[in-house]
Image (cartoon, rainbow, N blue to C red; front, side, top):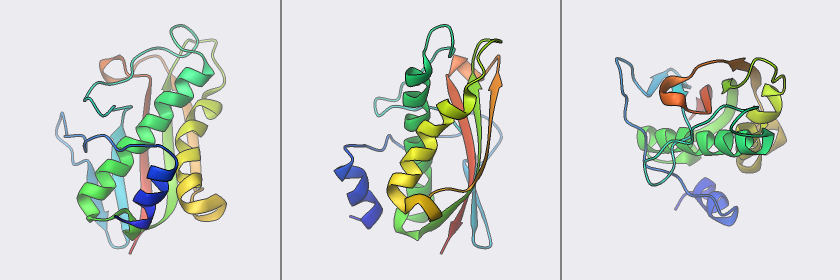
Length: 154
């Protein structure tokens, strides 16, 4: 078991199965020492997706839980593609989308649920990259959150 997987276990977090593409894209593409991840949603271990609109069906905490689950789906893709999460050096960039009502203006707080997982695993320097967090009125299948990312790898 990798060091990062031991940290996940200590946090009580479990990776879902690595998501399969549902369109014409790759879940991960490695270019040099960077791993680019396509948009991931809040895939749970049972294969279901966390659905809802923040500000209507979900509050900020519900959105953060969906963002946390999205981070776990991203980690599952990294593990599947790299063989070990210990190959990840740092988070470079995240782009988070929150399916929300027009009035909801706290998308960064929701995406903190994703970012916090990476901080817990890699620390406040390597676990924090640059980031954008945006609200949107629609995401595929009605999922609550979608996040894409760039990670430095070795």
